[in-house]
Length: 121
Image 1 (spheres, rainbow, N blue to C red):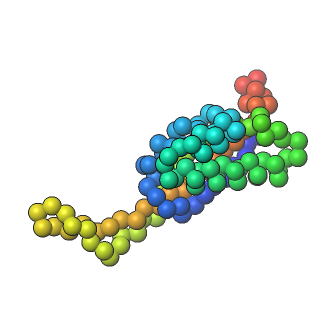
Image 2 (tube, rainbow, N blue to C red; image 1 turned 45 degrees about the vertical axis):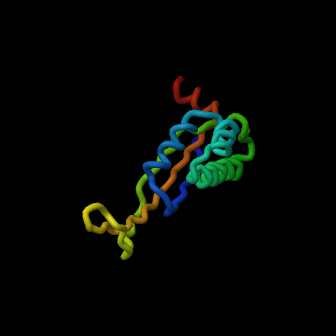
Image 3 (cartoon, helix red, strand yellow; image 1 turned 45 degrees about the horizontal axis):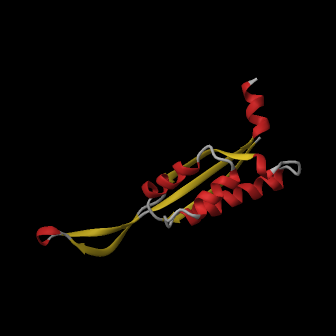
């Protein structure tokens, strides 16, 4: 069975979050949490929070699920709304650029090993 959690409107660039998300795709939950704990990117904390939420959703949905057997089947980062701030940043040759505040949506899907083998057969 698949268990899902979504974190929306999280501050930061989706491009930078995709670098961290690629590290945990396909790993077991305990291994993914260890990787996120020791990753030096700021967005790793937000991804860890969404991953823990997905584990909690799995425990809530099914009382018989073994957390040690869960693995990250799908995880992806989408772009959220972008705000263009009124502040300006100095640019070369006397020009000025507007500041852009980016946000992201993080989706984590977990599966247990049983359902993976059932889909193959």
